[in-house]
Image (cartoon, rainbow, N blue to C red; front, side):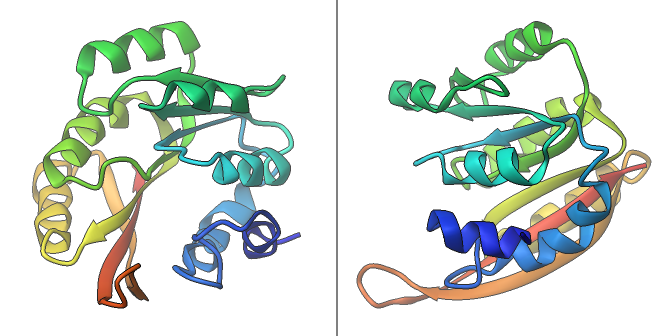
Length: 187
C-alpha cells in the first residue's frame, strides 16, 4: 500500500482526502521503506500517523511525542510515546538519551508555532542521521518564508531543502486556509 492508501485507510488528514501530504512524502519515503529503522513524530494526536508509519516502515521503531497523556495508549512492540512539549529542550534531551539512536525521519506535526518549530529543529537536527529526512507540517502561510530562510541561511551546512508545497483546506467554520509542508534532508 502507498502512504496515501494508508492515510485513507486510517482516516488521516495527511492523505488525499484533505492535505495531501502523503503524496509528497511518498517521493522521499518510499525509496527508504526497507532501510528506515527509526522515526520520530512530534504531535501524534489521534495516533493515525503512528499506525501509518508502523504499517509502512516494517523495520522501524516508531517514536512519538505529544502533550496528551492518553497518547501512551498507542504504544506497542515497535511504538513508544513520550509525553512532553517540543520546545522543552530538557524533555527532548532526556527522550533522546533514553532512545540512544539517531533518527532516519523526523516529522514535526506539533504545535505549528514557528519559534517552537525552530527550537525543536535546532535540537533534533543533530539527532538525525546523515541523509535523514526532517519534515515540518502545517506551517502557517505567513511563516513559511521565515523557516525557509532560516534553514537556507542558518543551517546551510547541515540541511538542504527538498520540497516546499502549499495546501489549501477549509476549516471548521468554512474559512479557507493555507498551510505548507517543508521537507529537508541532513547533508
